[in-house]
Image 1 (tube, rainbow over the protein chains, first blue to last red):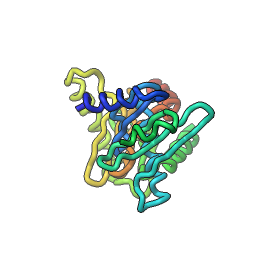
Image 2 (image 1 turned 90 degrees about the horizontal axis):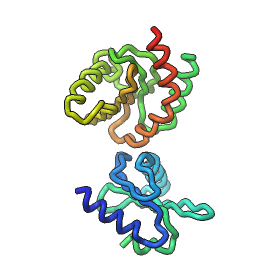
Image 3 (image 1 turned 120 degrees about the vertical axis):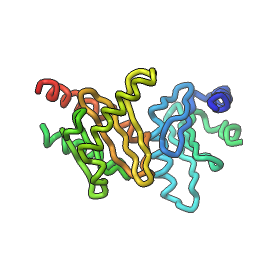
Image 4 (image 1 turned 30 degrees about the vertical axis):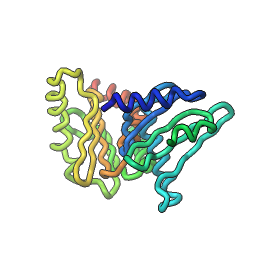
Length: 99
Length: 124
C-alpha cells in the first residue's frame, strides 16, 4: 500500500522546484512525507485545512496557499478520498500536480 | 506550580477543538494534574480506566517492537490518546472527530511540564 503512495510522492518531488510533500488522513495522522516536509506537521496541516473549509461550508475542499519570499506552501484536500497533502513548490507547477 | 501547570493545560485545552480532557497521572492512574471541559466522559477520567494503560504498555512490549510510547483508542463517540512518559502517563480524551495529529503534536509542547512533574514524582 505504501509503495503506491511512495511513487506518488516521488512523482511530486520530481517536479522542478518542489522541495517536499506530505500526506495525511482526515484524523491528522501522517501517511508519508518526503523532502523538506516533516510528518509531525500533519496534524497542524489538517487543522488548517479543516478551519479553512469552514469559511465556505458548501465548498469543502479549499486550496490554502502560504507564500513567503522564496517558497510557497500549498495545502489541498483531495476529493476522492480523505487524504490531504501539502507541497512546497512554486505556483506555476500547480496544474501538473492536480491532474 | 500546580496552578501554573493547570493554566497552561487549560490554555491548550481551549486551543484544540473537540479536546475534552487532559490528564497527567502516574502509572497507577493517580491524578497529578487534570483539566476537563463539561463534555468529558466521567468514566474516561476514572482511576481504573487510566491505569489500564499500564497493562496495555506491558502487553505491547511483548510484540517485540520496542517500548510502547503511544496508545490511541477510537470509540464510537470518543477517542483516547495515552502517552507513556514514565513514570507519568499523559492522557487526552477527545471527541471522535477531533484531529488526532494535532493532539500528537502537543507532546512536544507539554514536554517541559512532564519533565518537571516527573522529577517531583520520582522524588516522592
